[in-house]
Length: 85
Ligand SMILES: [Zn+2]
Image (cartoon, rainbow, N blue to C red; front, side, top):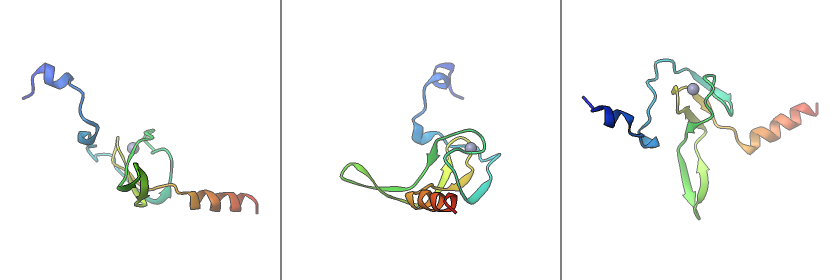
């Protein structure tokens, strides 16, 4: 059992794992904000020249574990094209 001091220590963000108790698989829905209100997501990415180079299209809410598809520039183009119809 952790001491009260250990309980108050900040966790490393990589160790913050949701319980998945209320997780929902919303894929292929694309979003910038989870249904729980969180705007933070876990993604799988590659890096090149100190920047994100590529990322997978699945993402998981860091707060509740719900899954969505990542928004991409192609999705924005399609949305804007639909709005012009
Ligand atoms: Zn969530």
